Image (cartoon, rainbow, N blue to C red):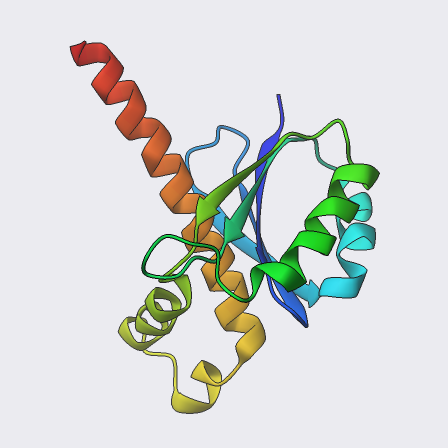
Length: 146
């Protein structure tokens, strides 16, 4: 059993978050250049087991893939080839950047800090992962009532 790794893949940068070993909470760990993502994950896997990758998939308001998908799909295909043993699931990431900015505001991050796009990407990955964990909790709760 390993951790769950979440990715907020962007054209230039990718925010990365990971669960604790018990898979209770999500924690942002880094933002890396998207072109160096495979190397980062390979190095991470030297020290930690990962059982699942959760990838944010950008969608439009009508639930169709956004324009950004064309930049993300080649990265996803490369990750699937390099890490075939790690299953990958996709979650809607429509509002994560806005939520990340609001989180920074609520947390008292100064204006210059809020302009730090790498921080926004890491927080976005954390939000993607936390929402995935909450969906698992919701499914468990519903299964108990069936």
